[in-house]
Length: 189
Image 1: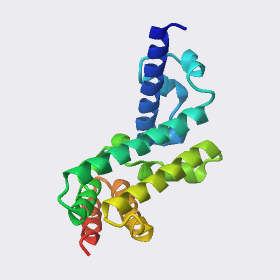
Image 2 (image 1 turned 90 degrees about the vertical axis):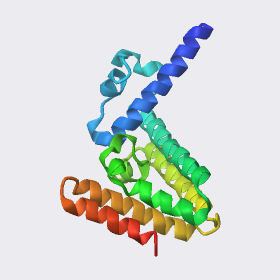
Image 3 (image 1 turned 45 degrees about the vertical axis):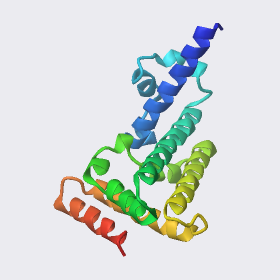
Image 4 (image 1 turned 135 degrees about the vertical axis):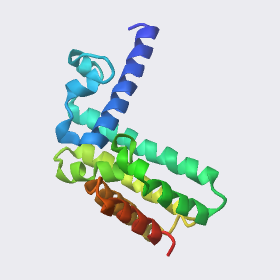
């Protein structure tokens, strides 16, 4: 395989992972097919096995990419914040907001993939989810100023994920916005 072909293959693989990551977060694993992931980047199903050994391998890679997005968002918030308290408030304000609720495809993997991880019998997908959640907890603890206080970071993640999940489940009803508001208020306690 020539240099250009390897570069193209690497680019295509990344495009497939990105598309699958968005589809998984938006619709869940049961509702996403290999054909849809390939078509989303303009490729045919026939080329799938040039990039992945199985659908499970793709979904594990897609979950990892979704968690990478969370890390980038948390890094951005930390860099833009005046101090740990400001960073924590901004995490809650951005996470528990209408635009995040309404854009599941680009949203948090902790929320979007939790049910899939709980139901799967694919150890690679579950491992990717668990590793991603662990990274999120560690990064939240760092942002909040105490990398050793995992329990506080886990408590915050519970509020964030629970609030967003309930808000998404009730989107279109006024209670959805109320849930987001109450959950954001918990950050100020």
